Amino acid sequence: MLDFFLYVLVIFIPSLFWIYFWLREDEKESPEPLSLVLKVFFVSWFSAILAIVIQSLITKFFSNKNLVPILFVLTEEVLKFLPVYIIALKTKYNNERTDPILYLIIGAIGFATLENILFFIQDFINHGANFSIMTSLYRTIGATQIHIASSFFLGLALSLTYYKKKHIRILALHIGLFLAIGTHLFFNYLISQNNSLATNLAFYTGWFLIFIILAIFELLRNKIKKD
Image (tube, rainbow, N blue to C red; front, side, top):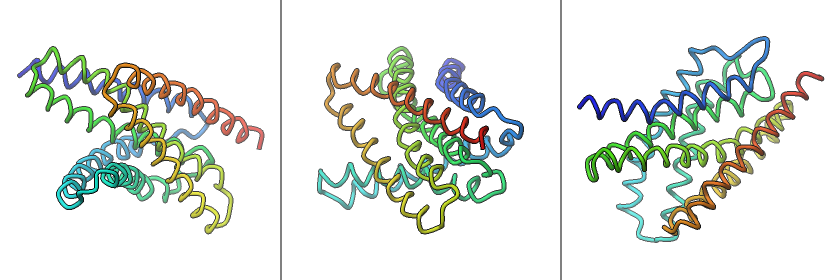
């Protein structure tokens, strides 16, 4: 049992690194409150659980094999966004253009963390510790990439229209949601091919997107400094 909890900790540690990394990227005179960051992170765990429940209902009541993957991703993207919007983006701490991106990425990391832990438990039960720790570590990197990349588009939509009128921000949010779903579906499609070429393509494309996200985030942060 001790080994099991140690393995879960190993899955959990990369998530803490991701959060630390993004908070470092967002260094400024008034950093985000740690309590709010942790709240976003852990509430996103409940979003992941709710997503699993809804997805099980989708599987039960929808037989269209083409529609189900889209509904799965739509469920995840909406449930990743809503708690972050309520907990962080509607507060006084959403006070800079880059804040929507930062909080949505933290929420995505929390969502992915709980997913990764649940997948690890399933693998642990079915295949044992050695298999589960290797596959879970690989998934921890890949799945977190996917969730960060897809949530980034929602955050970017809100960041680019941060000072715009409400109807423009709502339109941008819908566009961001469309891009988030498209990105997520693309990665899921590659992974579903169940071959090393497609899996590696998904993995390296994920890292490429992370670098693009960092570049855009840095551009927005520099623009804030100049303003």
